[in-house]
Image 1: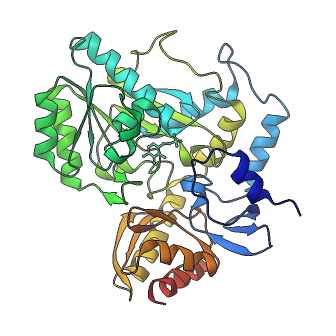
Image 2: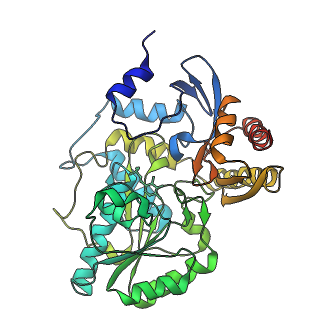
Image 3: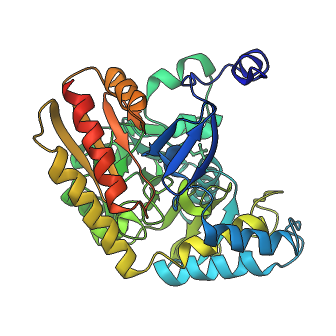
Length: 388
Ligand SMILES: *Cc1c(COP(=O)(O)O)cnc(C)c1O
């Protein structure tokens, strides 16, 4: 048998510490490895395969579009791109969408829009963007600069200038940082994903939104991980009752196909004009057709079901033996085990449940449509892994 792991180790750039598992095929929340071992998928890539593997509706939408056009440049109109933009705007109240292929790119577009808006409205010295410590906004040099985790920065200096990091959930510190510098925008995640499934306080977010409105500073919410139903609302910011100026998303949007989106609100609707920004692959009709099949299923009843499943996980694991704490919203949950998290992750994998980690927590991002009995089995395994 061809040793895929050896070939991968030899030829694929060494940027990922892969688990010793080759994934071969999946159906819904179940996935098979190269030895035919079956796992429950509690990671969905990293919050990407929102309706699980080989989802019938996604396949139908994608195959239909593949039979028409797999690509068109952005010099032409296509139906899936236009309909997805309309759907996202109608569901959020945002005004326009720029499509790209990833989370980092969706943030790049937000940063460019914020800088151009501020330069025109407030002056070219207003280029700074305040982000939070322990945030994660991507791996390009600019989104790395936005990311408030210095361990990612050290080897890649100089990064794009103009980013200031302030402590999360500390309103006064974020206000002070914004007022000390000439600030175009403040960018936050409502729940820091890579940062350890840290939920922002309600008061912090609502008062920050008020501050931004009063000071005419743009509020950018990075919903790359929290968006598209993950937290039990279409976007997490909706549960805070705020209206951002820019929302970025990717991960679950395309259901597994690469797609990023930058949603532009009223203040910045017309900031980017022809030639200001672009992407060869952005708004790919196949990805957009897939995304439409996802978005159309995220209705009120389905979102309520996500919240119910999240509450189930919470109630089962919060205070369980071997569990120090549980955080998160909807089906984005962090579990801090008493044992080292890597050990728990490995035990889960051995017992047939694939999870993720974020800092010292187990991170759970299961398919949004995971059947209840499958979820129960996964939670039982996680409990066992935390105590064994
Ligand atoms: C994953 C992530 C990104 C980066 O997305 P890529 O698609 O890997 O570029 C940006 N922001 C947040 C909040 C993320 O979770």
